[in-house]
Image (cartoon, rainbow, N blue to C red; front, side):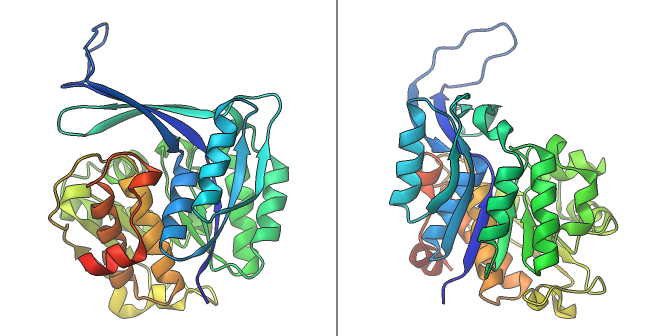
Length: 319
């Protein structure tokens, strides 16, 4: 049986512009390329999990504009169940405006649109979808209260909760005790803890601070510098998540894979989705993090968001 993953989160259209360098305030810089592509952290994770071979159900909202059919058709084409995606007649679909510099690092501005109108109807859709699910994936691009309610339901149902706290200002402090695996990147770990995460030692300090708040496991994604993970073996475990909290998996570092980066957009989404699928299949945390790191590495070798997500076979080949 393939892993059953439920994703509650954002569904956006990405407007991507590239330039030799990013403009300073008040400055205009001539760009080199422009493209549009389906995105949104929730939808990215849904597509990434589907390409890992998981059975995926997406819960969220799109608008009533020209982008909505494109967004839904793309999810369907990637094998994602979109029966839980509502179309809002009074809102535009979410838009992410992405700027890439010559080194392919990105800066992203998100206009949430219909995503920010998610409400209790999405919570009810999550509740139905969680029957028999292995994991619920959350991010911070829809109203925090909606994600928080969904996390509480997942906890009651014994379903693992994997939460990507991006953007960090959207992460509700009440959620710490509901999260099985928190997956911040360096900037988000810094924002959540006040610890400047620049290397493995500082990543460990931030992870320990987050575990002390009630999170069962933390994976700090450091991009080209690898990933650090820490699990609290004494915090207990969910019925289907026991492999996450073995004492041997207390903490560790996974070095980066050597690849040539083309575009870092959505690499963290590929990482999180692949790791979640691996955990659902029973991998120990160290192996699951390494699997996620391989998926994230492959994602940066291709332009775009969802179209850059690797397959299970590609990840296995890299490993």
